[in-house]
Length: 163
Image (cartoon, rainbow, N blue to C red; front, side):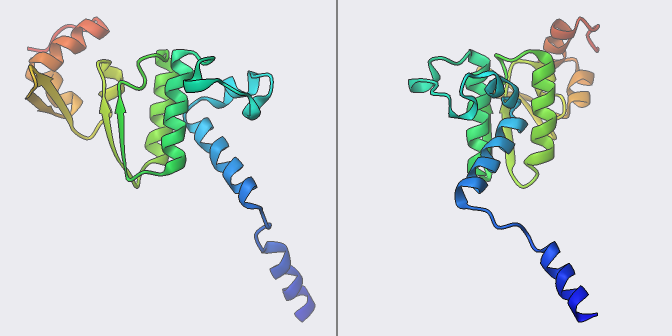
């Protein structure tokens, strides 16, 4: 009976990994969250591809997603996304936002965007006008107010403006 217990304990112990394997796994996880993994897999040398100084060989969307992945690897307690999803299509934007929500629960995330779909799930939205906070609230609250946010929402979605 003792032998079985020892065997079970050995089998359940975590696999030993090197620091390089841990870093590789973390980079791949961040690339997956940032929806960059598919593009990397298409590169000739995959994750070993040289992308040039400042990512000269990457598209605008790939650069934005690479920056997001870098921030995720660093695990910063405050993450600021300054229009960082503007160069990706709506489907990729939604996939990245969903993955960020699921993987950044310990961080404060600040989104700066012009695209309402990027902001609509935020806990609190601040609308700036001429450098000042003109409105703030949840997406639903701001749409119902009929102000600036509501007008931009109507323009972007084709929805009738709330009054």
